[in-house]
Length: 314
Image (tube, rainbow, N blue to C red; front, side):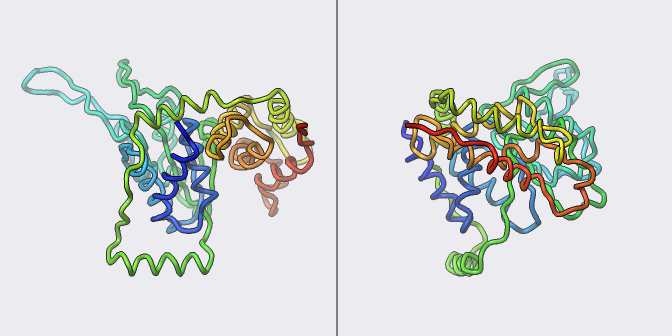
């Protein structure tokens, strides 16, 4: 399967709804092909939900959305056993987690007990209720959103759960020209909904995920990935806790998916650099003295990328 051509068609469909965010769309698709979960941290009204729905439609995947609130219970996500009066037995009623793409909207508004209910689903692709395990559909991707500004009444995601997300992305405001284009398209459509055509099937998505495993990674690229990760552990000035080995694997997976979308069956340093910030920044904990400064996790990873030597190929 030509992943580059498929990726161009998929992103082309999603661009009908999302204007001027090609880099973000490419990273979202790469994350899905790498079979990883996505955390989108940005302000309200920047089309985070629309982006998730559009990808689900273009990929031919089942989509469900859960609005996380302080009174949301784990059973509201996973499902619950219900007594059937006809059979006189308990039957498991599946929750919204049994889907291909689950949008966890404002995930940090739910209490830790509910947040942790997603951990097994995200890591093991299964749900256990009252001792019985139920496998989730394949593929299964969680796209979670949270508002970085409004923190009152929220429950910050614990590091263990943050680490389960392959990437943390920010959409950002559109440019003036792109915002004009958004308004013009809305006038032309004469309705709110955007028509997105299906490009692939769930089976094709799984096939693309399998093909990502065949993308070649040289020893020099492996050394580069390890050097970047170790740089976060050796930075005693700015970083309290560096990236774990799970972060190394995440960088490897996403680099391969990014290379395939670019039309290559091998990874180059530019692939690693393109995905390093969204893959690594949420996996480091900064020194306490930096919490009240303008220094961000993204800035620290950017400095490390500038500092660590890039392998050269003949």
